Image 1 (tube, rainbow, N blue to C red):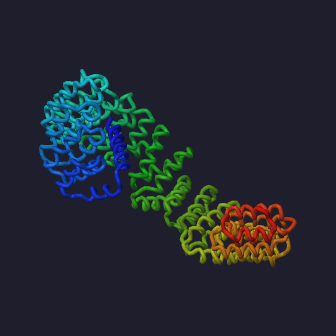
Image 2 (tube, rainbow, N blue to C red):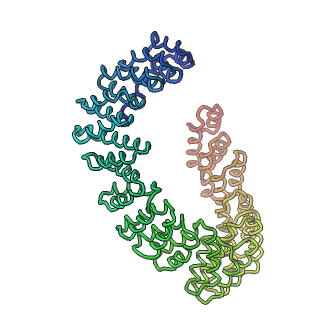
Image 3 (cartoon, one colour):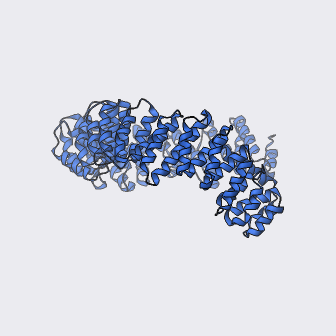
Length: 625
């Protein structure tokens, strides 16, 4: 209902603003003297009166009330008038609104009743009580809400007496008003009165939303005695009541709420228990953690996953044992949840606990703890390295992955050695992946790339290929030089892999290297691959037009196949300019490119329509637009 009137007010505002001249609008907006604004109310145009009402909400006193009251019956100005009357201090606005309520009807009456409620006019209670019986349900509802906003004893009694016998259409508003009265009673320290009103609404024949609102209030008003009612609603078959109980539990500061929620974890259905755990974690009271840890250790999977999620927020070092145990279970989802919780545990003492356990771990838990060290990014290179000698392949793989996630820059040689001279050949792929993971997170990529590149010449061909791939992921000047050297080598496999890597290089500094390979490298398939990589950079990377034009011209000079030259045409169209048009026209002069290039010329010309040079260039080339 109130949303409707806000929309109505906005609509009126737009109508008035449209009718208002800019100069008069600005003049009224700057008025600060009440007398001048009253003068506008008396003699101004409707649009000016509307703005004057708005200004009187700031500068008005009782002196302007009589003129404002005259506008309350006006269809276009009633809402504007009430803005001022709601804000002006003193008893005069209250009297004016009460008088208007006796004569108005329909939407204007509803608006006035709303304003009476906003002002909390105690003297209007009898008037509002009479309007509760109005045949217009919207009027009765507005009167009810106004009584709820006033919230004194007389208003409360009137509302509670009307609740049972009110027309169905007004009953929801009366119930809402009763809740408002109960909230005021609570704020005034009258909990017994609040409880009585809340309970009456809970048991009344009113919409479920009102029952839900009253249930929240009834629990909170009872303070520590509200726990049984909380539990009752946590066990209610009604999902709305269950959810309001959960929300209310988060608000409660009195009573053993943690104990009640902990009990419910075991008593509720898995889907509800999972939600109860989240409420318990949000409270994060002294009784929360033991119950959550217990839920994480065993029980329905849905409940355990919720508990693991909660431990990521509220767990501490005491949770590590349970989390490590769960991480070692066979269920992939539980393992993932436990590792995530271990990674996010906010307690820094958890790191010390994990390291202590790692140093003493048996063969069964060692892989799990290594994974934990990795996800938590704990630097423990010496402890991890010891695990590389274990016979169990899973343990060695976990150690390598942990090193990839944690090894510091000055210990990169540990991983590099496992790639160059693996202790176990079967671990080499994992070692390479770990080295790549470590390399791309190093703060000094140039130093890292230099260290890796230094090992290429003395490595096997297979290892060289792997190292080149890692260097491409690292990027930078040293990495680029190493890949370029491989591309210029006499080894066909190295040329193959390096040309592919250069073709996908993610920085523009690869362009000169690719052009060099495309123009002076061996006349083989790798030369064409380098050219296409060069063209890709011209197409995808941000640069100024002179630089892009130069790259395109270089590519045209280096290209020997029409297929490669055609790759340039989309670039010309994408970055349309007079210079690009000139290049496209030149390309259209070649027989093998004429049809495709001419289409590009016309496309560019269309984008540049209006520039005098375009028509001249097309005419000189004999191309009709």
